[in-house]
Length: 374
Image (cartoon, rainbow, N blue to C red):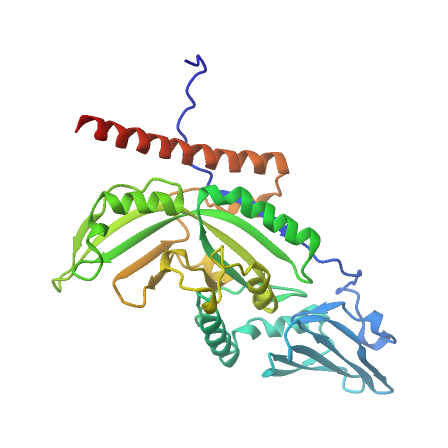
């Protein structure tokens, strides 16, 4: 018997950084850029909004110049035509061959200010509806469109951002982090990407009379433990509505992986992470239960809306994910305040694993005791 003191029970870490990647680009100064001094393609930004500069597209004229920045998908480009006489930019963009908003902006503004006119350009209704239809038909996921008053996360030169959110069990944190690290090192994306695991809360409403009987009892707890590695808040509780319907509700903590990238990188990230063994699956890879399915949201939504609600296709189960708990210290503070080192990240992963092992050990002992008493 060990004489080591028992470790004090602690809640799992609220946030665990899982990796980040910054593309290698040649240096460029947006504040000092002067379109009148452009003579070569290398005088232009190496990346703008939807893709990298196609130097062969650069055309210098006596009255100005034009160039295209090309994305990863066919038919994706961001084009600028500079009129020296009028000292203005004409800017046009296409995503997957779909034409987006066209804008004419005075070059008296800095290039960064001119590009800020495209805040929300990837919220273009046609682009949004097309992305939603294409991704939901190809993958087991849900794509949320921006609302009219949604907070936008927009950066220069990468544009609007999206976040891929997917549930992850504690025992998958370490393997996933290693996989992401390998991907960043061996196949660095041409855009910035940031990944973190957030501890969130989920309420699962199993509709009485439609959902299976096991959703009412301890089996629901065991299944949840297997899915998350963390213990739910308790047994399912029956909740009745005024219209006479009722649901058995299980509340639980769980980790979700939040992968944030520019809008232009969403399709590429899904392609890179697709694996029938993981929760990034195409439809042809086989079925994937709702509790395992990822979803894509405008990044600003993570800082504005407290919940994401989803239903299964049969309308037997509703899942309400609470992305931000107002009673807990803001989980975003860790990633926004400072960048922590590998040793501290390893400790956070170990802490989450310890809590999970302790929960599983407690449940196992309880089940063994119950079996022995019968």
